[in-house]
Image (cartoon, rainbow, N blue to C red):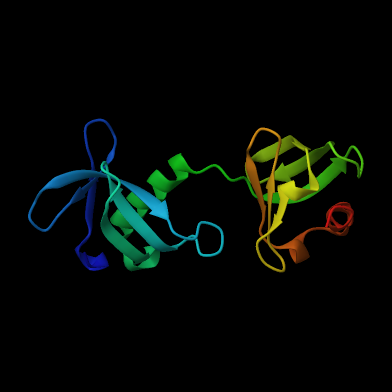
Length: 155
């Protein structure tokens, strides 16, 4: 299905519905193909049976109303706070307790292993805490000097 032909709505339960060109209405779930590296590109709309019903090359290609529906649904499903600063760490030995500022507010997380820090790219990290919550450092170079110094002890 072409991105310009995608029509979305919500049903009476608030679930996202794809309206096909034939007029059928099917409940769908948007899934990002590259949630970290390219979050606005390659979105699959998957039906209840797990099969892809539509593909969105780029969210920007959708009309505003359709894009907002997809973005709302993705926000409801995804929880990946983005770290903006490391305020304190209990030490450079594992386990280590970190106090961080994120785009969702302050958090305290526990790092159980150095393997819980995954380098996505040269400047991007994904950090998993002891509860399985993933935290994103989008750009190491944009962190303050103290935050980078804390991270250097683990990288």
